[in-house]
Amino acid sequence: MMKHYKSWFAVGILALFIGCASSDFESYRPSIVYEYVDNIAHVEQLLANSLKQYESHEILVVFDFNYTLMYPLEPCLHTNNIHLYKKLFKEMLKKLSHVEADKFLTGLMTTRNQALVNQNLPLFLKQHKDVNFLVCSSSLKNNIDAYLNLLATNGVSIKNHYGLPEFEFNEFKSYAVGRPIYKNGVILTNREEKGAVLNSFLNKLFKKPKLVIFVDNSPKKLDSIKELASTLPDTKFVIVEYSEYKTKNIPQVSAEAFRKYWEHQLQLFKQRER
Image (tube, rainbow, N blue to C red):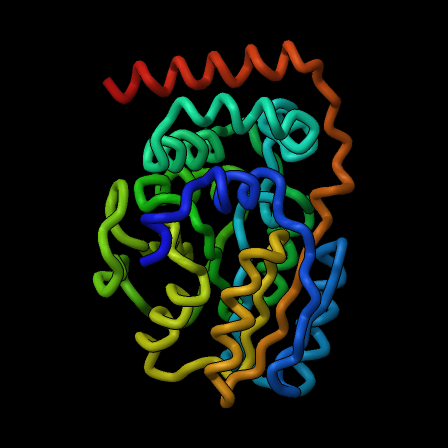
């Protein structure tokens, strides 16, 4: 897989914390729709419109985790300040190998100092309990329980009706801490492309969904979903670029405060890795 040759510095780091510049969307076929939304109410409207054409069990809604469902309250960890001090951020991470950087950064995004991007999310999920839901994050496998705990602590229950037990995606090569994993409605791709892992998940289903609504804040990560959609002519895809996290009021920190925060986190990480 290409991931073993691409570092956080080239792709993953800024995609996780800052996101990537939006790219033009080329329609591969009429059954792929690309939407830009800035509130979960708009996602709910997309789902409500879809329920006029499809049965609940025929729909799969997939949410990204970071900056889509939840965002960090720590200002130095938030995309706003990382973007502001991008050069400094990259310089500090050069002290780590690619694998270390993945472990370090994905681990930081599991801390309890996070909040829901939209407080109506639990109600939204309850109101559409007959629809199938998934969370799909590019985080590493060993963060699965932390992600589930974060969701549960915030009243979020991700459920679907596929009846699949916990499993690892053994068709992918092991990287860092293992392979992609599925557990209780959550997929962690372990740095594999989301489109490839979601395709593997769909292939394990007895009956594939007729409609997939995929919601993510990162245009870069949505690229692999576009590619997947182009290979599944019998499934309609609504690909949603979701930017509600940008409305959060995150304090700007000084360069010195930013440096001190990240140097301290690096020190703690290196101590844990010894």
